[in-house]
Image (cartoon, rainbow, N blue to C red):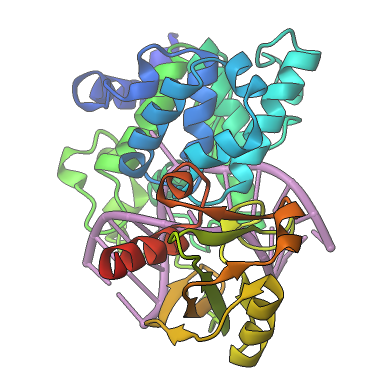
Length: 353
DNA sequence: AAGCCGGGGTA
DNA sequence: TACCCAGGCTT
């Protein structure tokens, strides 16, 4: 008996992949371990179309693992700026340095050693070994979870540990011995192009004949939605201190909390605090309230009230503080800033020149 | 097990 | 508006 007849799931999927899969993604040509790793990390909770320009810019600046390991963190964060989940960039950077120090400058091919690196969990380690080296390891990302919950008719939110455990078992059972790299790409492509979240295109699906959700008309119910809960709204005042040369005072955020390590604006909890903070930082005489906006995170809303202090005169004391710096437009462009802060500063520049 | 961590796309 | 997305780490 051949492998093919025992595993119709993989056989049918691979036949579909040869004709309809994605074969021209940037990290597929060339497909080395460094590029696969970088793409997998960028793609964590982030869609392909978003990642592609970041990936191209990143490998254009840092083409090899050793280049990444030798880069300074500000460069890495600037390349990541706007992509979100910035801890991924720091883990990537640290993992590259570990590879140089402990693995001869290459990603380890051993699963446990690979998964021990920061930012590489079970699924990402499996994806790297399967795609870069053709080794038989399952993956379980959002695409695979969607395909498998439908194919096997599995109810319950996939983020729930009991459901996830079952999904890993199915993922492993379906993974073939041959063509593992193509299979891994194939099941993700199926999830990304046919077995999509809403209105899946079952008529073109190579797995429809064995799919429980398709048979029972449950494709709209699976995968089960996450139980919803109300999210809180927090508020902050962002200080835009601008000197006579139109340079803006940026502050590097601390190691904890959102946007950690990124360059952002000084903040205060309210307007009184903002005045006190501004007077600590510079000589200022008046403030102008800018248009407030709300930035939405997955776990809370952040209401931002920007306050503009123009013609500020820097206190000499802050020149010695490495986490504070006055930046012109060019310097801002080269730093890692949270997307809404970058957007705020750009709109300010556009309106007030 | 649940919370935390971004930003963009979509219905 | 609410949810989801090529998840992993921390508590």
